[in-house]
Image (cartoon, rainbow, N blue to C red; front, side, top):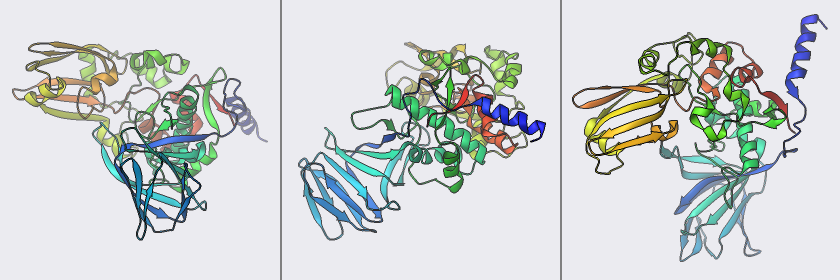
Length: 436
């Protein structure tokens, strides 16, 4: 073995811990993902043979491939209307089990992006064991049971884009696995019937809709791999586009500011820190600039559409309409000014006063500031110009800016970076570890 190869081999061994001393997860767990929370009825198309099990009885209903079933709740019973049959079932819990490993089903009109500008509905394809619960509102809660690695195959392509380079997909797989491990152990998103949710408050799980061989391969090649600090799993936060400068976790989630990886900067970010974009004048200059950073779509590397649209952005709001929106329909009078009080190191506003004629709202928190708008703003890194009729927002980035910049990860992968190097760039104090 050549000397360079020996050195590389040793570095790889040093960077990968084969066990995590404090992780309670030693083998691949099963996860319960809530995909629908409160839906009055369901239309489900079956691809392959399935069976429907009533938890309150021994009776099983066989559903054949190409069948379409309408589920509804009438008089507290669950009704099923098939092509040729009708069933009225007394149950609060039904289970759909596939008869073979290739069977899937399609649920119509699954909501996604609720409360954000991309909110919508789409038909989604799922596999695994599907649980239908009748909730206290006599609506359906739908939960998918899957092994963790299979769950990640439905997360990775939706979170970073299925057409991303393999090394970026692998970095995303590791980060998403970290999120899932932390969620399972902390119960952060759990409910009576689920461990995780499927939308942006947790991480987006879209079933089989966007899966590709490449995205599946990224999950398979990183099986059981997470990031740790001192032998403990970390929550590897990520966001779409940092706008050129990462944000400190203490400025976004002070209660989560324990991981050392979030209190340091990568080498290129350290250089940009000298610009001190926490002041209003320099924040404006920064937002108007096109810095030479990985997530800049104009740096010669072709980046996804979401990067092209959100590295720098502009929004125009009519003053009267914005006054009503930000006042949440309260009678505060006209909006006079949005005054940033404190910015984070990335230029994101973390404290602001919304000054109306009759009241001033003091808002703290990057996300709370974004969510004053409906739908929420892409980022709180913005400045405002005013005309007679409008407030004009000029902004940078999409998301909170903490941890991995997905746009930057794609750029680095296209320049030949390995997923380990990408992860080290965004989580410089973390260790790549294998837990099962």
